[in-house]
Every structure is written in C-alpha cells, then in structure tokens.
Amino acid sequence: MTRSLVVVAVLFAVSAPAQAQPVEALRTCLMDSTSGKDRKDLVKWIFFAMAAHPELKQYAAAGTVTAADEGSRRMGALVSRLLTDSCATETKAVMKSGEAGRSMEVAFEGLGKIAMQELMAEKSVQDSMGVFMRYFDQKALNDLLAGK
Image (cartoon, rainbow, N blue to C red):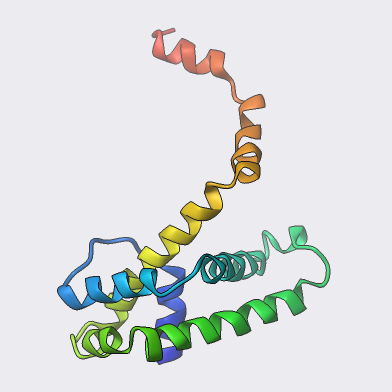
C-alpha cells in the first residue's frame, strides 16, 4: 500500500489546496531537500512513465527500457531518502494525520510543480512549445473576438 501511495503522490494526480500544517511542513521539506538534479530526475521519471502509455509509446526512442529502469531506480532512491531521512519528522507527522494518502499527494504536488517549472524555463523547451503558433489560426480568433 505504501508503494502505491508514493506512486500516486509522485504523479500528483489531483491538485488541491493543502489540508493541514503537517502537509505544508512536508511539502516545504521536500522542496528544500531536493537539488536541481533531483528535480530533473523526477521529470525524467515522469517522462518515461508517460512514454509507457500506448498512445505515446511509439514516440519513445529505442532502448528506453534501460533508461526508464534507471529512472525508476533513481526515483526509488530519491523518494526513500526524502521520506525516511531528509523529511523523516515531517513524514511521521503526515502518516499520523489520518489522511496519509491525500497528504502525500498534496506534498509531492509542490515538488512536481517546481520540477516542471524548472523544465519549462529552459529556452529550448519554450521554443519547442511555441512552434504550434506557426499553425494557429490567428485570423479565426480575431474574427471570433470581433463578432464575425
């Protein structure tokens, strides 16, 4: 069950405001206890997890099974370190709160947001995301806004 909680928490499947003081303490500790490299490892792990989806699998490069396994190994080590060492006090408080699963989701959501913000700040990522504007129909939007 703990394994499932961690996976769900790291995927931060649901967004919601933090519920209690122990959650905020854990969220802060998670963010303060990770380096830029740790957050890049988190994003890589999410990337490989998403690439396993049948609709996306065809776009993943050959040989990613090894890279995905390495990503999972790094995530396992990172989450273990965070929950049992760096943020042990905060983890205990959350586990005793009565809503450990939801609290873990909320706490890891903050870490996921920071990791994604760092990824999105990279110029090459921003440039790539802007390519769709070549194909965007600005005239149709202007017509809509003009009441045409």
